[in-house]
Length: 487
Image 1 (cartoon, rainbow, N blue to C red):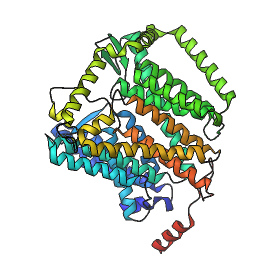
Image 2 (tube, helix red, strand yellow):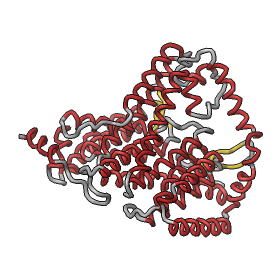
Image 3 (cartoon, rainbow, N blue to C red):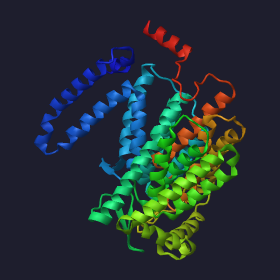
Image 4 (cartoon, helix red, strand yellow):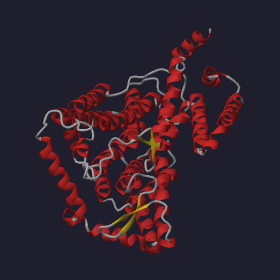
């Protein structure tokens, strides 16, 4: 049955739905005994897993889209055999199983994935440091496993996005998902103000405000997530590309920018400002007419929203803006700085290898808040050696992207590299206040950045990559190999 599921592309289009229906019915019959032990949820989860596995095996791109969607749902944690699992981890495991089956049956192949040596070296060093110095090795391994899953998602997407058509297809999903998360966050803010209904807000005890975090882990991560989409869509709007609809980009930019403001995440606001600075530096690659339209549209949108101002929601934004000059005096910022000072003192006791993954929490279980930045976490967890590896990895990602942005020709894919690079720089700034570097959406972002770099380089060299907006052409060599296998 599994082999036939993989070959569905060469079969009648009706077969997948028959096979899917038969599998769902069969799983339902098998699961009839489960409600007798008062665990009906197991039936639903089992059905969803089986259906997902078959669909992802049939069409792997559906699994990619499901994974991108799942990365926007990291608010939801599930206890699985003592491990904290997120929806993105569950979906990713299903997609990896489907991809593994396709590889086993030679229906797919593994591409070279960028910066494999650096990423592998950092994860290997993290494991070694945890074994050597972690106060709680089991907990360190659990967190390290989640880091490995984030990298697995990166490998999956980089391997799948091989040409321009797939790249832009995935980018549309990549922008649509945070736009949906932004809309949910906006609705949550308005619902609380107008009806007192909490469907995704957290209470800030310091300034006594209700801040939306929607489907994301918390408000700062929500702000960083929607900010990255706002930055990327802004760059694409300013460019002359015609691959992605300008109406779609305008909608994405509007809702993510509004959600970014409502998140009250000042680090994300600063990150967006950093992205805007790089836009100015690269203004020669954009169109001034488009800039004027974006500025006029943004001013009009802010005027309308501030006039409507449901429940006085934008008063919190104005008050938050006024705190920017004195942010260092606030309790939450002081707490982050205190944690950072404590971490630096601890690090001096184990300078070369650090204290293992999540070492700060295992060494100081009484402190609930985390270290604020990925660089500081790398230094504490893996010592000076790991920090150098991590910094090298970041520089390698950005260096490759900048090289293409500066040298590649005036193509839509080059503009996409610039958009993803600038938005990633904004993410790095936002992560200096709340570290979310090892959550799935960050590695989806990096995977698309490296895929865009690869496609832009191939096009600059005259490689056989389909132009943007055209259907991908199957490679002759691969088709011949498949015919030989079937023969």
